[in-house]
Length: 385
Image 1: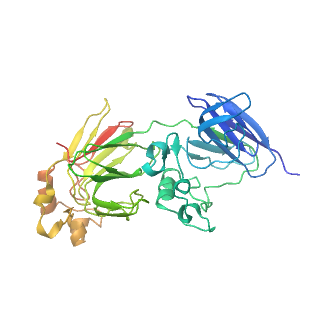
Image 2: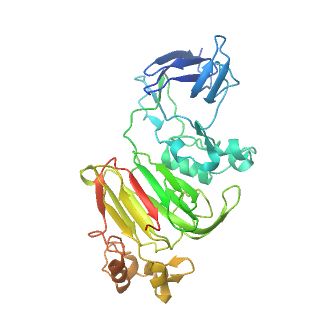
Image 3: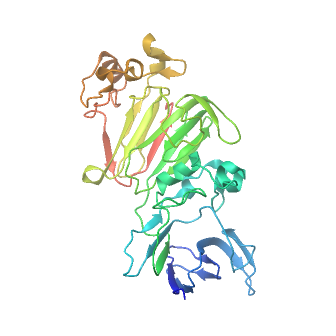
């Protein structure tokens, strides 16, 4: 006889939700409430539904996670709320698995829903995203989600560790676990032409003149973040195409760094003394002028490179849409610092005279790295006034 598994769900959020279990039932959970239920050990599914209305007979609708307009549920896929999943029994001391990133805030335009973020299978309905033939590979979308939430299944065949775990008894599922407040980046296009903004993590988006893109970052992101503009791009309805500068493997939604030349904004959270480090770098070249500043009251530092370096670019570094860094062209230690230490060159000194705030060669740290308190919000402007 199989043991009965006991599941406990908690909801430490500020709003009420309906929780769903497959196969079992559904239940409304207000802030701080729990739902404990027993399972026979058969495969099951648990998720939150949001913005629901049900009558006395359990008939109604939910904005996300709705299951055939009933309080009792059968299935759902995609993302609507962050989640943590862990066992609570002494027999199993596995690590907690979770997805705490604000994927709704980072959701690509083509996958957006008013209350969540669709999986690309639900939108495009093809074998690439749905694995209809029973075997498929990661996509640009799933790779981006995996970067944000390494523990989770991001496409149908993504069942390698640690996306799934074995636990003998009693997992606990927590919706919206406690986390540090994420920093918000507002990316503004002030260029008179359209650019295609890119962010890692975050993806990518077309920005016409005057438009903004707000990117909410994962506060637990421990790598260096990157933001840049792509120019002269063409993409099809599936977000596949190319850009003249800053191209990221032909995808609208970037999960890899851009192809030089491009002007780059970088950040790293919770560094020395719990400070955020941020900078503008020309180590990947230059394509558009840039301003980068803190927007929170605790930090309003502004750094920028507003000179038209494209127009001043030496012949040997010229690109049709920008200006290469000499490392990209000459590929030697003098310009690339491949041995970990190098000095300014005539090229980098020239750029430093034009844009004193920016990285002009890989070890140009002393005058090019700036700090703000952790939790600061930021704004990146392409072609500032």
